Image 1 (cartoon, chains in turn orange, brown):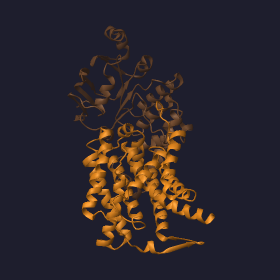
Image 2 (image 1 turned 120 degrees about the vertical axis):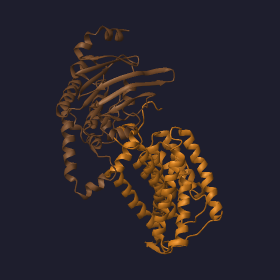
Image 3 (image 1 turned 180 degrees about the horizontal axis):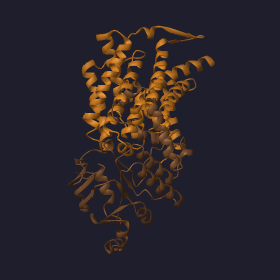
Image 4 (image 1 turned 90 degrees about the horizontal axis):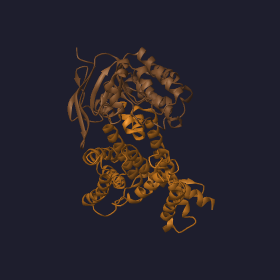
Length: 291
Length: 250
């Protein structure tokens, strides 16, 4: 039993790391722009496809393919902020509708380019096995956990130690107060979108080789990432990190006790439980006037 | 020579309500200027226009001869305009010290990297010392490492004012700084503002309803009523002016 538990904890940490990336990207955008970008899942998926394209057609280096995918998604993020979300700045409902519309456009765009069938990406780290006791994992598992650990630490340092990071934090806490001390809000909106999209690309590029790359591969990470930021507390970065990791581990460990098909049920039951017991989320703050 | 701050023929309407109706104010020298008037006189709207939060329907704002009426709040901030709000705005999750240090940062792009290369640590510790000095003056030094959310309403107001002053603005607009502050903190605020003006003679423009506070603080008073400037003068003259008394009593 202990072996099985350890196995699921490592599996869960790996998937939780992916959810963490999705949640962190969404929470950065939500914190600064106060818009939930439902297209984040398809951006994650595009990250996987672009990484596959770079790896198989251009670079033949997984690391460079990941970086290329992050760069391309940053540019896409920039274009989406400028072309779509900035124009709908004062209309939150339309921003949400636009992000839902983007799912259709991007998903079908990907199908038009790459076709509806799943793509496989063979890299060495998915073939190398790492034994732990009697268990064995792919090296990709640990590459994902390590990369996400380093990325999250880097984002944390960026947000707390650099001027732009501080400006992002300030804008998310009080946009108007940030503006009157000289922060250009437009630049912060662009920065949050750019970083959020690059993180989505990193997630897709890391998970793609382990499973397959297909047009709906971002749907579940989106829902789990969304659950993570609600459980963690909307707008809270530590909440997104703990929420993402927690969901990954809980869903993996739950498969020891209940049929695998029900693991999503466990996650969303946990979400409902948190909403009932602590509606503001684990790290969220209840705002006066809210029930 | 151009006036330090010139507000010329500013009008602003919200739907059918004429909030500002041809406001002219010229400030030729540094000083503490009080802006008073009954509720709805247009004081906050005038602040919003000067600080770029609202664009006037007509008229212009000039700072040292330069038209600034259509600049965004962040650009105005970089030109030396700072303001506080009626509803206090601080960064609640940051410590009091970080709130102040954030106001002190140079927001120009690339400055951080240049400072890293040129070992800007001296500048950073000087800013920190200055931030602590200002926090001590408003008796918030013991709260320096606590999040701003832990402060009382009055203390947050003081923190907001310190955060704006540390950026060394040339024009500081305070919107009802005394509201919600207890009498002890009010004295602290009064002495602090006078000391700051002594140290750095800039333009303070203060909207205030607390008459004893503003009359003892300001050297000049501008009275607004129904979107227009009713009169201007020294505090003593204003307190004797029957038109002002009429405006307040309706």
